Image (cartoon, rainbow, N blue to C red; front, side, top):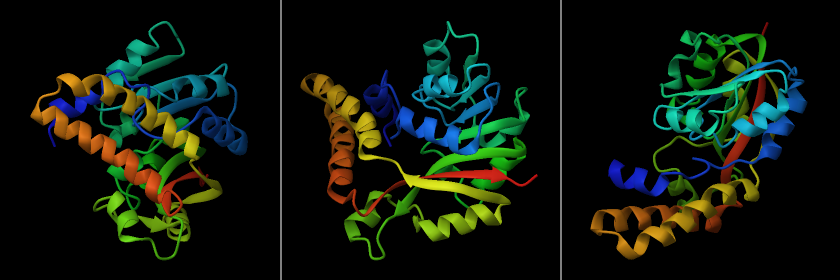
Length: 239
């Protein structure tokens, strides 16, 4: 991975993964998240979901944690006293001074820890009865095409029943699931494609390769979106 080129493409994008404010609202309503809840946005990117989380907890607080984009999230909400962003690895959320949390929101990032370990790690940073909401790569059909399998590269993508079983085995009760919508995916891809168009005329060979890679990702998803995507999972930690 040419990280310099990656960050050139992704600089100043509004979000680092698929999602929409409607997802946040659905999760918080389903989970009955209190207005004064303490929330962690784990793997927040530049804070694309922070505004929706703040709206969902009007007397609460939101901590956005991202290894690469935490400072960007902090700058984005510099004038919002109820939010802060930090550049840190979200594998140790329990060490944050705001922990334990009422809600951990983890959009398109739990896979960095894996489905076997991720929920267990998050459980350590949740209050008893706290809620974990995360989006996980999922196959929507029994026999996904080679293209759908390849989309997730080497990640061990599973079906919804297998995802539910793994979360329950980590000590959670499933409150609900739903697919991240096409609109949520386009909210990620369309700004990135606009950025690609701006950069391409002056791009050198390395950057051109990254631009092609990012453009190919969007095209690949649009071709196989009926077979695979993100499953949004809402689960309550056992008391």
